[in-house]
Length: 149
Image (cartoon, rainbow, N blue to C red; front, side, top):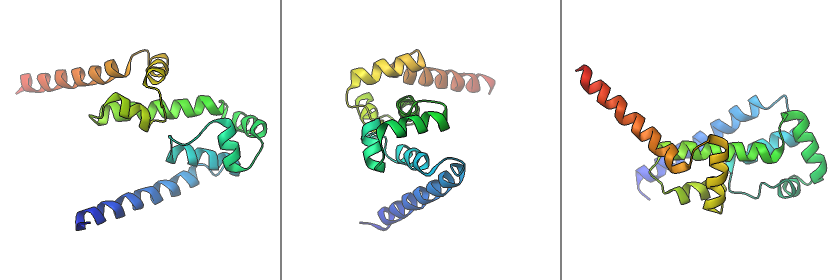
């Protein structure tokens, strides 16, 4: 490891701890199981986040967890997870040059075709078109700035 590697590792650890602290504070009006579920989702979208898997992780009944989550969050656990995964994918599509398959995997989707269907259903566009529309808009903004000079 070089000094910069150590700095990056330290920086990442500090950011994770800060985010955990902010998350803990912002979730304090939810029950402890729901706080744990949200924190787990926020930190690992690739984990087994099914209702059954999440319930096992928390050592609670799946039906109880599902009911509690819906009651407190006003959305089903699976819909919440899907929303989080698609929002994460949107950030990666706009903020990186990663291949769409990698973005799907990092967002918790093992099947790129399923990812594309869910993404399109939720955003009314495909992942590729979403990325390209941003790039196109960005190029238009640059062209407008150049015209003003």
